[in-house]
Image 1 (cartoon, helix red, strand yellow):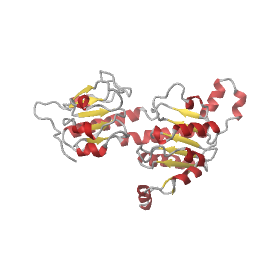
Image 2: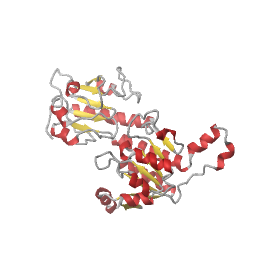
Image 3: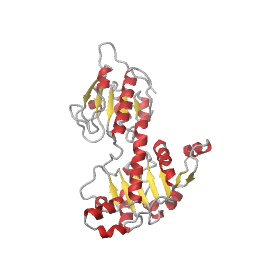
Image 4: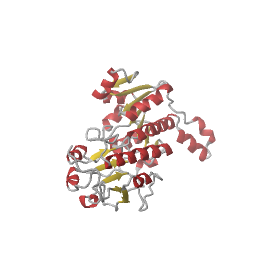
Length: 339
């Protein structure tokens, strides 16, 4: 990585720009208090950036800043980094980094960080929440009561979990944590055979987790849970062929990124009964339009890419991202560099 001057010269300010996608001009965010006073106490100045057009700030928009606290999913390219010599750090409030050219920014001397420790358990629990809700047909039963159909209470027996097979796609920190959480429920856990996963298994980790091809995982799973990152190779990894291999009684759960699933193919599989249902905290296009077919399906639970946003999530992620911003500003290596 090329190096840029980190600590500001005497008399110069180190300025952090807050992405404006979820931030008000006074610094309040949809997450609540994220601890901006820590930046002030550390001698860093912060300000909310002006709204941008689209999802990628221009060099002009980034020019006033030494660092960006990126709450949403703005994109950052090598060309823009090359044209903003002041920029030293892009700090993600969360774990995802799709849309960021990690290698390109590294070549230009811009470090990118994220906050995996604060995300891991809340996101695993979000996936588990959808798993439990679908396995017990929670919304169907709640809807029956709300609509005065008490006599229908025997009509919504769930598939249950004991003895069922859960296929986890994306066996990084979130996937592994999820597996640890659900293993005591009596499920069989399978995942996709990747070199990194196989190495961990050979090292004595992942006991009881079976490694299969993606096609085999589709055919064997009662529940498929996606926690993977979005990359060119993972885009639409759950497509029409994958869904056709799944049992008709099975469910898909996605807490990773919406484009991991071909949403048109998923909608058709649900419409025809090729699979039983889905739990989606992420969609291909967010927010969805009012006429999005998935929103009208009783077999689908859709939440607004926020199911893991608990109080402990905000506290832990905010603490981690502020620490990273202060460390980089003072020339110290951050805890979670991505590049």
